[in-house]
Length: 361
Image (cartoon, rainbow, N blue to C red; front, side, top):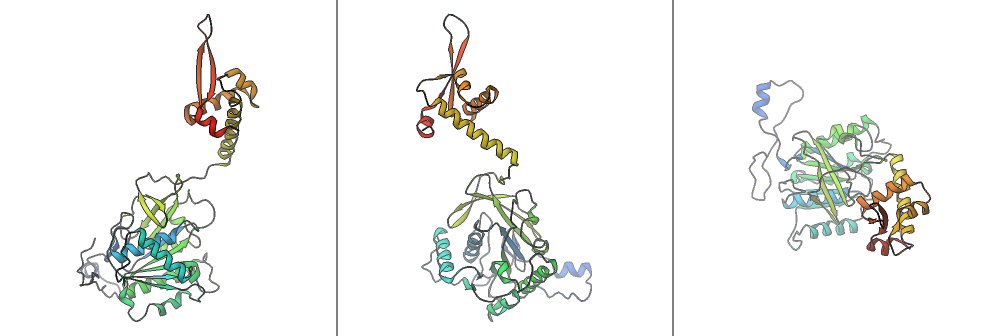
């Protein structure tokens, strides 16, 4: 992290040097004038003056993720394992009614064990739902004290696009991000932009390709952060590419309403299975159910040959399914009994008692 002095309120004392883009600058002058990176807001992810995208599928919980980030910065506590630097936060929300926004932020604060009885004045909010608030008009909501904030959350991007703007238009979206860059520099703050991913499977896409609309959306941002479903339900994988940090390793996060929490689970993105695999899984499940019903007709172990004769599919498949149920599913057991007067064995199959009482009619 950069080392900058803080004032008595904990605010970072940093005034970015004025840069003149109208003429070239010698490399030595560049090194002298810009010796340090901009101050950190979220260590490893975001600095003052930068723009961060939070991208995920609709209704997966990206707004709650942004809400947790806002409270973390506003109180100076870590966010999903990333250290933050205390600062004032402005939330511009154009999706929620004021009542819903109030309730959500209160619930997040309670879950994060933030003392809401204190005189909290580090988060300002504006509910812009139903208002005409295109991106170029948002400046009016910053007030005269425009340099008060270190973090500004814009939720959601699609509702700030000027009328007639196509999010697939690279030039139009670049103009939107130029506006964000200009005001991030002017306000010495970072913008966090909440945006949705495109429809369909996202699992095989690169990080910067996840996100609906033009490619300039991911290219223009300093941090492009995405969340995709994990192989385990209730979990997701957080990934990010960054411009002024080394990009972090993928992180598993767990949805514990109303917040996301870091998890030690391996970050395994849920992959869409090929159609043939899905069909085979469905077919195997039906075959297993059929075997369970056959075995459930007797309270004693059933001779293997009788099982094979009773099912509607051939012996090779029946044996494969039985072995899978015994070795992996642990729903049936194999029993070997020596034949009378010889060294040969008969093989019997039986449903495990707990499976029999819950899965068979």
